[in-house]
Image 1 (cartoon, rainbow, N blue to C red):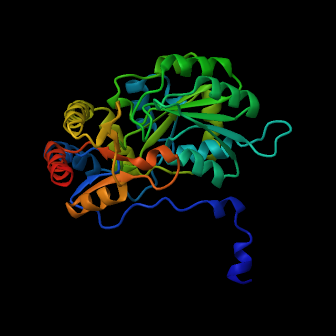
Image 2: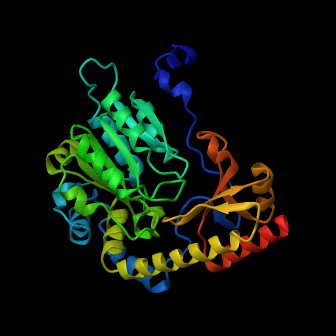
Length: 364
């Protein structure tokens, strides 16, 4: 069989997609990936090294990640059985797409409802799994359009709805009363609230979700200092978590990631909280500096990044910043409103100062 004939066996949805790519050879100042800018201090690295020193790397990992799920339950609430773990949020989005994929009666494909613009993997993963993604545009303030969301839910009867709170790439938190009213109005849909950036917002839907079995919470350590270990979770009703466990790959979290993530949620938690506080302070300071330029408009942010509208040519600005060894995020596809914007991850004080100076040089 030739390659061309083998390609006829690929999912037709793949023809509509492009791979998720990261830029090669990153510059000195990386303000484009929404990571924490702070490396771990030596004492934290020593604590991790000591824990890894005794790890039995010749054995398979704990397939249930017992200690890690226990740490999550103690730190975030609920029981360990409510937590399903994955390699970052991405794997959990794929697990939900696999497990919750039975179409509604009379429908050809399951539907996922997505307020947009938002995290691209909600749409991409659903398409890869043969779902029908239905996007609902956010309003002019990047908030949920309550009427449009309710109409779309009534019309399409989605299996899943995703709410990123704070939202990426807009940085804002959706109005809480709107989210709560939608969740309560449509109890036959699984509503997934993604709190990947929740540490920077000072709010959570944990208490709200605990009272509603059709509401799940996603979280990750990737945005608070541990992007490299790829650990995420979804907290979901035990009857549904038992089903998600059936589609989770065995040993999907390696031993090192489990050990480090458990430390991040316990011994190292105070350090991460200090770093989050520093990033929030830097966010406010950077927003003030950028607002001095008439060509720039900063949208309010509750995350570890800023969405900034620029009155000039975005590709030229980004290329010029790269010449200053600074990377920011630009948007060449998706919601047309984003094409006049850049997304700037909050860096260290030194990195933020370097960005400010570069923009002064570029914009005058």
